[in-house]
Image (cartoon, rainbow, N blue to C red; front, side, top):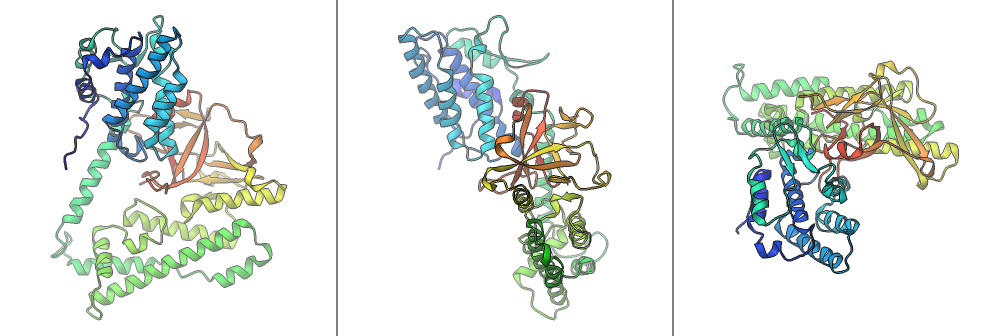
Length: 488
């Protein structure tokens, strides 16, 4: 099986594209804009391929954009521009070209709505009468060191000379990303390498503390077991709430049921592991996996299946686990919390759905025509909130990636260098009738469970938040701005 990988880097990618375009192909269409638009298409093709390098901040799903997409889009250009030329129409059919290239050819590969939004934004940025404006020349990107622009109209050599003049390495800013995206990419690569190295370390002999492997695992198992809370008595809790069952109470009962399953699984596996280490029972493959995970500081797979998605190490996950228990206990004793820590719920979207249901019942709204609207408050911390809002709820523990937040002005601002993720102030979620919602200067921002965002199966998206912005929305879309419920 032979596979041709796209070259690494914008310049090499465009060079490879132009190498495959013949002089005849570039002179197939008599329209004056044709050659310039082929160059724009080659640049766009290179950009969508190079964005993959930056992982989840580039694309939620890594798509296999390839040469056939580019060639078919060239045919589309020829067809539409020839028709315009023959009819002596000075207008270029931008709407049709944007739709066929961005939505059909390249967008047809996209299974994620937010990835498709990035493609349509690129189409709006790269295609339009403005690219031929002589008064205000068009640049894909330019700064003091480099200028990515469309070369003067001419033969193929004109365009290849322009490509050769480009730098070999390019910054993430050329794709509309923040320079921090590169730090994130290298951090992820280093983390992945260290995880593999940890998995490859010897599983026998002594650890650095002079303690044997089995002894160390037993010590960790006993430590975790001592921190496990008792299982919630669901019957007693149900009796307590039986007279006032609201949609959010149903969510609490379902959450406790799932949390009980996790506690029970953890307790049983830790007790069996300790017996197996003492030689009382045989070590099964499942227990062996738990032992290996505890030794390497990872969360065992059998626990992970019963817990919310997370990328945390075992130590940080136990802190998260303890905080989840405290939120559930306080919810039972003192009623619904003033500020809901959404990351502590197994299925966070169920709470938001229950919130809409409760409001619809109260105001007699049709459920299918109601939605959620969000506002970022001036409360930097959950402890600053003294009471629940009259309508909706407050949410804390959201992390903003790809941008920063100005708490005074209440709007998105550019990230500070080397600050990849910041904690968002308390967010207010308000259920509202869909037809009453009129938003301006707001970015519909996806809220994901972890920084792995949404996968190809569509798992990971919780809801969409509205963040106010004074800059054009395309700026934030290309920077891959999102919110996550968990910091890694």
